[in-house]
Image 1 (tube, one colour):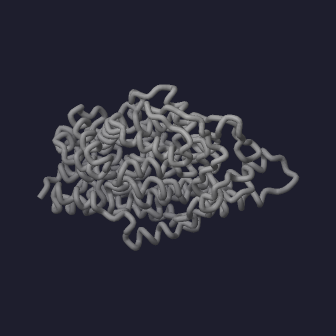
Image 2: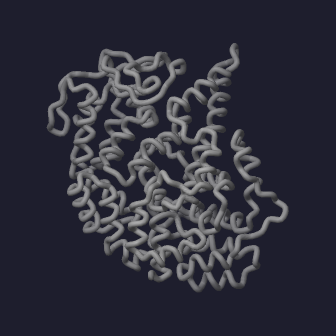
Image 3: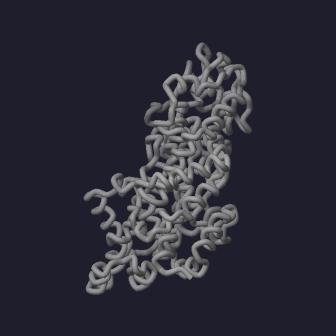
Amino acid sequence: MLDHATALHLANRFSFGPAPGEIEHIASAGFDGYLEEQLNAEPSKLPARVEAQLRSLPSYGMDTFTLYRKYWFKALAQMSPGKKIPREQKKFLKKITNEVGPEARMARLIRAISSPHRLHEALVDFWFNHFNVFEHKKFVRVWIGAYEDEAIRPHVLGKFRDLLLATAKHPAMLVYLDNAQNVAPGTHGSGKKAAAGINENYAREVMELHTLGVDGGYTQSDVTALAHILTGWTVGRQFGADDGPDDDFGAARGGFAFVPRHHDNTPQTFLGRKFGNGGLQEGETALLMLAAHPSTARHISFQLAQYFVADQPSPDLVSGMADMFRKTDGDLKAVVRTMLTSKEFRDPANFGAKFKTPYQYIVSAARVSGLDPMNAAPLAEELKVLGQPIYGCISPDGYACTETAWLDPDAMVRRISFAVKFGTGAYMQPYLARAGYGSMQRHIQLQPEDGKAPLNAEALLAALGPDLSSKTRSAVATARSSERAGLILGSPEFMRC
């Protein structure tokens, strides 16, 4: 039977803090029992209520082809003829943004708040940031939810090589980092704004961010060589036909496609290995080389340990994880188990040592309060205010997970403001009214202004237990009842995990 402090540590680090009754479950399961429960979960199997909430979102579960046809192509077809393109383009993009984007964010929040597979949801947050794509770049507007569901979620505890290949071939990544426009010199891609030549964006980021790390031992010549090797990897028609789209809007864009006439067969030397005339297979081979590289093992291990254990994880921890990565050919479940059973992770000195990102903070507030996730749409708006909109990181390195990235006076003021509003229960309806959710309105239960009640401060105190200092408890005890929950959620202790 675990003590309350250790159970709370597992709830905080395995996911986003405890839900009502969860501390008791973790304490009863014990450290090893709860760890194995989470490592061996079946994320595709969700409680019926959670599954029903997800299915209530019209775009949930659609593949890239269906999303393109139903939203992008359909919205384009409805553009009024004879109008100025910039005006119509803004109208078109707004329509897409107000439909698909909010539904994808709701799907993320529903699972983050209510899925029993806590560790899986934390790993989704980690790996999406690691393989970040930006929601507002071209077709990614309609593909963002599909990218998470197809390329990230199925692989977070599988083999790293499968995760790498899934992200590399997904249309959202191909568009975001421009490999869809990467063609052999002297050839031209399809479309009104056809690419003509090598684009190194993806080749550079896949080494610097996704695999080897910035100091992983590659050179600019390796970047150029990999870009040549990956020419012809693009976004195709339905079911990934072997031809590219005809133009920017007319073709039915769907899955991954390899276009042989856009591939450069010129011999290349990449990380000391010769490539040439291998077509699609040579690109896969190059990525698998990166997945198996010792620098990748170290880089991935450091990143995981930084997210789950400490902003500056110990070299011994990272080394042990990297050894397991190499020993198991990148088995992420084995690497995560090594990390979570380490003395560093179990050390009470590390309890509460991590500063929550805005996403972790917002979701933890929703979880500990028992918020119905179908009332969570305003949380996506709050995350914009706190500087971490879901799917909103423009740069390919994703959001940081360290204290220095998020702890500053202005950020604390915004968090405390949120805590006060959330604690009183008064913020739901006003935020939905101005958020402009369009089709989402019929899928969200609005909470009326009249009859609102503050969150149960006693329940919060019981859930957080020894995590709250005597100073915080004293402040809560002397505050008005309507302010107590806000004080708890705005406390220094609740900002940490």
